[in-house]
Image 1 (cartoon, rainbow, N blue to C red):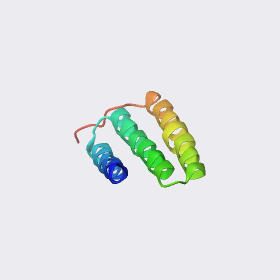
Image 2: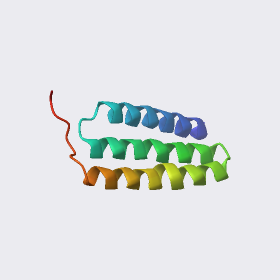
Image 3: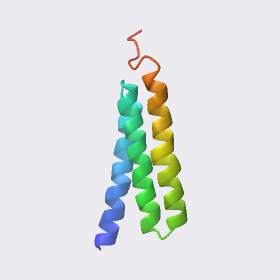
Image 4: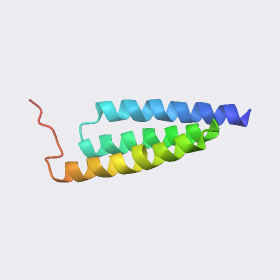
Length: 83
């Protein structure tokens, strides 16, 4: 039962973080939201007994992609105009 609740919590967290990332005006916060989605997905893969996929998702999705986006955002304007 606790296993089902944990999986359900991770799925709700992923959906909430994805919606947060889509509607966020600040690009840095949107990037953090996508990192949270990738981290929750890697935990979900681990719970579903796919540790190789979980490690790949954690390394590429949660870590590397987030770092590349943060570096790119630091070199650009962070806020979009209200045009």
